[in-house]
Image (cartoon, rainbow, N blue to C red; front, side, top):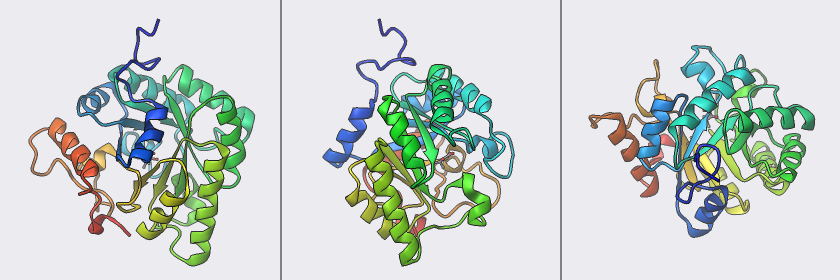
Length: 274
Ligand code: KIV
């Protein structure tokens, strides 16, 4: 019945309950972005647990200056391509900007990412207000990854891509948002560009696994944008990223080095954290 692992879990595939179990067992979760079948297959072969089709594709694939122009059609197209390259890793796809402002729109958009894009989980940005949407999706058994901290879809409101939750009041707000999305039924929580100590506190307090990017070493897992990991991103390297291709002679060994560094606690080091 479950002939195609891209559409249903195989016996060896990473599953949502397994991710919860990893947190309980203290085993790190390794995640990376991918946008096409070839990179997805390389990630899968490296033993990385989760592949994210991020709306970062707007910047690294499409050359835009933000994720805001990315459409649901773009996300579905790239998610379906990535799914064809995967056999084991769990596939998460981003709900793009304004594709989930209401429960109804979130249902319709998630249905496309899961049905056509073959994703096993959808990711959405936002705290308090998003809890209602997360609750609605979770009630329908749609796995959700929440995303807090630096939420790139809010770049104009935030005034740029900068570290969030540095002062006490904002840190408390972030903690409250983390509690809210967890209580609403999210399965994972990405924390982007938040101080290590705050990410550690959130990781201790919420029941769901936290996945950091620029959030220090204490999260339950880590995610990087593929092109940052391979040193391909033009301009200044973001502080939180590391070029794992340096010193390696193939993309496969760079991906394996990244996975090993996350699992043995070497990455992120203090110089990658805030
Ligand atoms: O879009 C993306 O790639 C992301 C990661 C940076 C977490 O949201």
